[in-house]
Image (cartoon, rainbow, N blue to C red):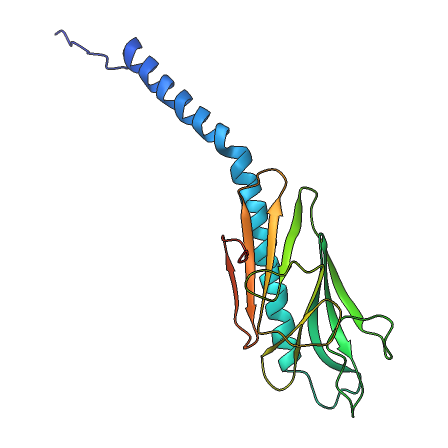
Length: 196
């Protein structure tokens, strides 16, 4: 009795076509890798800042009235690379000054400082539409509501909206921005702050 066995395998041409398709796909992915890494890091920077703003908002609107030193929480931005999360100090009878200040009495307490990576920065800080290009911006939250107290610079005043824009020096077209309204709404987008 004779058994015939047929071997099935890839031909050389099929193998070459499969390998060439794999090489083309790998080349396309590797060509876009640097841009996708920059885009991801910029996205993470803006989202981490939104989370920090949300944390300040929740803590600021829910602090105990029995606490005699902490009257609110906020985020202080200084162009181009400083973000400080702080607790606003005050007293039982007086609200804090609603701006970041280490020279006030009692001094505000720095909870954390965000170190922005090299190649990334705050490109613009705005409180008006079109953008007024500030160098400093303070967003503070105090009891009993979740509304934001937006102060341009380091001066106590109140604006309706704020826009914080991040950019990268690695690709000028990549921009992320965060918008904060005085009613406490915080949003992040891939668009720039309004320009003149």
